[in-house]
Image 1 (cartoon, rainbow, N blue to C red):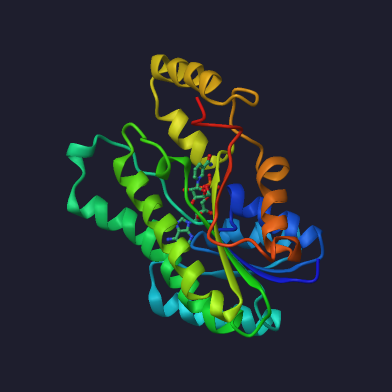
Image 2 (image 1 turned 135 degrees about the vertical axis):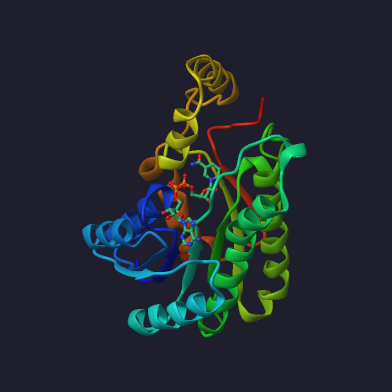
Length: 248
Ligand SMILES: NC(=O)c1ccc[n+]([C@@H]2O[C@H](COP(=O)([O-])OP(=O)(O)OC[C@H]3O[C@@H](n4cnc5c(N)ncnc54)[C@H](O)[C@@H]3O)[C@@H](O)[C@H]2O)c1
C-alpha cells in the first residue's frame, strides 16, 4: 500500500493491530501513543516509527504531528484510535471525571485532526478515521460518560467530513468491538457473578459468534480498506465492525 499513515494510540489493542497490518501491507506508518515503552516496542516489531505523544497536550500533538509528517514525507491518512473507557452510574459522574474522559476521547481527536489538517490538505482524497463505539449509537448502561464522549466523536467527524470535503479530505467513524487490553481490564474488574452475566449477555448480544472480534482479523482489515483508495468516495459514515452487537 503506497500510503503514509499516522496511527494515534498504536501501543496496544486495536491501534497496535492497525500499525502491524498497515506496515505489513507496505504503508509508511508513524505510531503515536502516550505509552512510550509499549508503543516503541510495538512499532519496532511492525517496522513502523514511534513518537511519544499525549493527545490531550495541544502543543505536543501539533509538534509531534509535524515531526511525523516530516519523517513520513507527508500524511495521506490519520487513524485516531486512542481512547479510554469510563464506567459508572450517570448520577455519580463528577466534573473531574467528565473533564478527564472528554479530554482524551473527544478533545484528543479534535487536536490530532486539526494538527494533521495542513498535511492532509496537500493530497488528493486523504482520509481520517476516528474511533467511537457502539455505546454512541445505543444506550450503554453504566457508561453515560463514555457514550457521551464517543457521541461527540461521531458529531465531530460528520461535521469535519462536510467542512473539509472541499480539501478532498474524507472522515469516517469506526465503531469496533474487539478483544483488547481495554476489554480485559473491564472484564477483570467484574465479580465472578458479574463476569458470568457479562459473558452470557455477550453471547446474546453478538450474533456473529457471541464474542468480541479479533483486532488483526476483524478490525485492522477494515481500517486498511478505509485508508485505501477503494474508500475514496466514502465520507461521514458510521462504520460498525462489531459482529452485529446491538442489532438485538
Ligand atoms: N475494544 C473494544 O471492543 C472497543 C469497543 C468500542 C470502542 N472502542 C474504542 O476503540 C479504541 C481502541 O480501543 P482498544 O480496546 O484497542 O483500547 P486499548 O486500551 O487497548 O488501547 C488504547 C490505546 O490508546 C492509548 N491512549 C490512551 N490515552 C492516551 C492519550 N492521552 N494519548 C495518547 N494515547 C493514549 C493507550 O496508551 C493505548 O495504547 C478506543 O478509542 C476505544 O474507546 C473499543
